[in-house]
Image 1 (tube, rainbow, N blue to C red):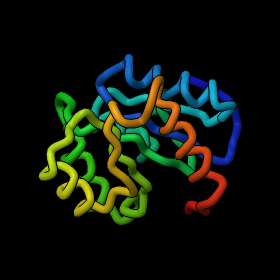
Image 2 (image 1 turned 90 degrees about the vertical axis):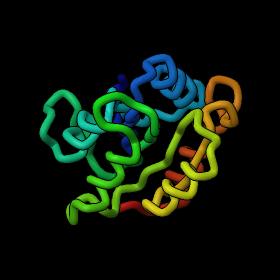
Image 3 (image 1 turned 30 degrees about the vertical axis):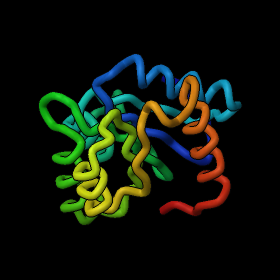
Length: 143
């Protein structure tokens, strides 16, 4: 989606291309030149993180924005596989979803997500998400 070089790489794992494009537009509008890679489901996302898909390589440091409701492999299955992999168990994952169910929030936090955000609550065109990622990149040192 973008080829810019910066201190943070973003992987979007979401089957909604409109949401993925909104994230990219929001980052660009905020002046954040984060390279963004998009995976349409959990299987593609895992292959990208493992370096198994040459078209979707995501270098460290990186943050994953994860939807929960996707075909083939949903967000919870993705998290289960990710946390079980010793080479990737430390990945930073923020859930970005439409689900406001408390059971989903609790389950996600039990899988050690860094945050749980509702797509409807991150502001117009995901402006709050861009601000969060910019602040996060400036304040946190990732592996």
